[in-house]
Length: 89
Figure 1 (cartoon, one colour):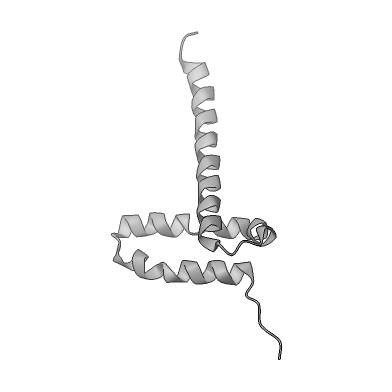
Figure 2 (cartoon, rainbow, N blue to C red):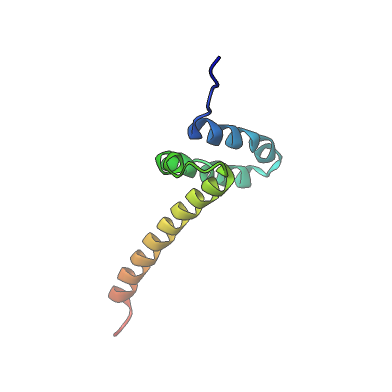
């Protein structure tokens, strides 16, 4: 008989579903933030699969960090453009 190999997507889904108990114990505002953060790894499933790592947690955290860095960089660029227009040189 053959063995069933879990896909990285399945592994990510399992970890994310395990976190639902934690999310349920949070205050509503924090729960919404956590749920938003936990959507980020789904944007990087292809990269996680390509990495072939058995350490799914590391890949999930890195995916979240990448997306947070993307948001921060976008905000910094918007701030710089706004500051250039509003602040005297």
